[in-house]
Amino acid sequence: MRKKLHPDLPAIEIIPDEEAETVDFLVCAAVPPSGKMLLADNFVGICCSCGTKVQYRWHAPRRPKRICMSCAVKQLDQTAVDDPKNSAS
Ligand SMILES: [Zn+2]
Image 1 (cartoon, rainbow, N blue to C red):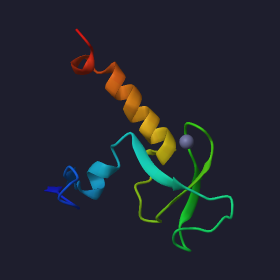
Image 2: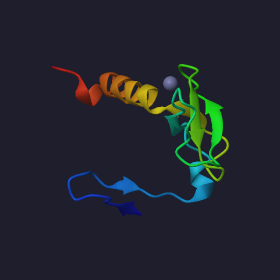
Image 3: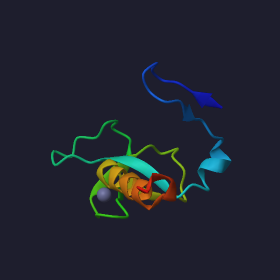
Image 4: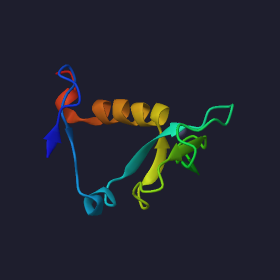
């Protein structure tokens, strides 16, 4: 199922929990230096790319690597560079 959260944003795909366990990354918010969590019962993990502390919900998929938002954006930028459809010709 694809769902638009805002008319100006592209639709995102909502996938079943079982399928979520098969994705490569779980994009997470960083834990701020203050240590204040977005939700008090969030779990804390480590970004697989830069090692910063990240937070995620207890019901988030377990298998995917946790990655912070900054590293996820860099990963997307690199994926776009590596995609032959985006090469200048
Ligand atoms: Zn990171």
